[in-house]
Structures are given as structure tokens and as C-alpha cells.
Length: 409
Image 1: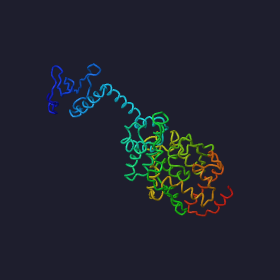
Image 2: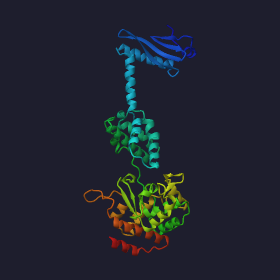
Image 3: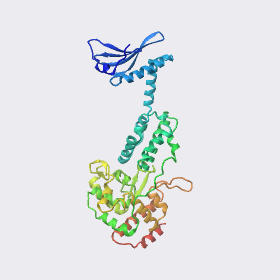
Image 4: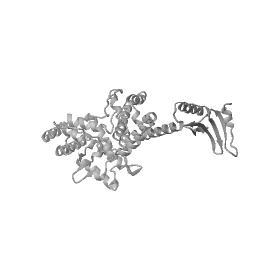
């Protein structure tokens, strides 16, 4: 019997009634008004059966023949091609149901949402770096070497920090899969020392009083929207993390107790945190309250009160003042306060670390609660605000403040 040709398949046209073009060995092309279909007729256990091999042109003549050959091999081994196809299809669907991509989507719905910038960075990691290589793979089949190969691709473009973030993100998804019975273990733990270690850097900051003074003076004289001016002025006064300041809500400002009370969900260490307010900080907040106090956020974004100030709001203001990112960043004010409070104003490091919301533990390894040293921290924050005012006014005489700190100790 003459075999079909690619031209004959292409030129086959529908007729009033369905018809078939044989390719031999039970394989043929069924042509009807709705399209062209590859079929294989065979007998198994005494019964005549038909196996669908695909639809033309999605399945070419060559591909149909390859499927036909595999079906004939199964038949020769006493395996029903139709049953084998169904089993393979079921296994494929089960694997896709437990794919890395679907587990990532499921995991993302169970966790608490982070800041907009964190969400955006995480989605970019998934869509650009992890899903293209691991997305369709059954998560239980992904082993450490395969994950490492994916992370190496990120490293190869010089994105060392990104590779480490991708590893941590993948680990969270794998651990969720383990917890829900879709994987046996998290392979990311086997890559502890496999990635290139990033060079540790610190946020740029200014720590010399002679340089801090002009910076604070420039901040105090900066002209912009009330929201940006207030956020900029409070950045050095509160020296909290930029995200904590941007997402500050009016319900978290306790004027009666002269402090800000941040819930654990907003903190890096997942512990509630208190920021005592100096009189200067209270004045800034009360001046802003008539403007934004009816909304949720103390510092709403320019595009609407439903979103907080952009993460570039304070950074852009610093650039406008003439300070480059190599000189100072919003986060860098934490290092400014940490250095000067310790080395110049002589406040106990324990107080400073608590106010920075760092992980501070006692001799027994227990984390101190949020009210630890609170009265002393309140005095320290007022001293810090007064000190910054003095520097902005050209007063570098710090001895009285040094004695004040000694008296509080």
C-alpha cells in the first residue's frame, strides 16, 4: 500500500461524507467537515479499538507516525495503547496539578501580603527567574542539582543577591509543598554553600556631626508637598526602617502616650515595636494631621489616599537637596543615629538596638519585649531630636548632652 505524503495530507478536502486516507498499519487520516484527524485502528483482547493520534495540522504526518509506532510497540508487548494513553494523560495531569508553578500560586494565597515593593520584587523573581525553568515541573521531582542549575543562570548575569533571594523564595514554596504532602523535602537546604556569597554592603549614611548638621538644615528648609516634607523631616528623627515610616497609619500614632505603636505584622523581626516621639516629631505629625488625618495612611501616595507614599518619595527629596545615593539613603539615617548615639552621645548600645528594632536577646537567649528600656528610650529620642536641632543651627557643643546621657544611664 502506498504511504501518504505531506502534500496529500495538506490537499485533502472535506467531502459531503467523511472519508479516510490510509497510511498503512492501521493508521489513517480521517477527513470530515470539522477537520482532519489521525487515527489508528487495532485489535486488543479480541476487540476492535481506535486510538486518536492527534489533529492535523497541530500534529504533522511525521509526528502522527511516531505516535503510531509507539502504539504498535505497546501492542506488541501486550499493552493496550488506549489504556496506556489514558494512564499517561492522568499521570501528566496529576504532575501538573502539583507543579512548582501551581504550588507557588497556592502558597502565595496563604501568606500575609508584604509591601508593594516586596510583592513586585517577589513576582519578578518568580516570573523571570524561577517559573521559566521550574514552573511546569512536578515539585516532588525537583532535586538540588536542578534548582542549583536554575540559580546559576541568575548568578551568570552577576545578580548574586537576586540568586540568594530566589533560593529563599523557592525554599518557602518547597516547604509549603512538604507541609501539604506534595513533596518529601526542601532541596534548597542542600545548597547552603553552593552559591557565590554576596559582598556585604551597608546603606550609605553620614555619621560625622559636621556633615549631619548641614543635612538636617537642608531637610528643615526643603519645600515640597506637606506629605513629603513631613516624611523627610521624620526620617532622621525616628530612624525607623523606610517601609515602616511609609506605611505608618494614623491608628498607630498614640498622641496621648506620645509614641508610635507598630504591630508585629509590619516589623522585620515580627515583634511589635514602640517609637517614642520627641516634641519635634509630635509637632510635625500634628501639623500634618489636618491634611491626611481622615485617611488611613499618615503619608498617603500622590496617586490616592488608598496607597502609601512611594518608596522613592524621601529618596527623591534627598537627591533634590543635592545628596547622591552614595552619600545618604533613607535607610542610612539608621546608621547615622546608631553611630552618633553610641560613639558621641554615649547612650547604652542596648537602648539603641532596641530602638532600632534589632533582634536583642537577654543572657538566657530570650527576646526582650517592646517596652524594654522604654522610659530611657523616650529620653534618648528627645535628646536625639534636640541634638539634631543643635547641629542644624551650627551648634556642635555636645558635652552637655554627653553628661545628660550619663545621668540617664
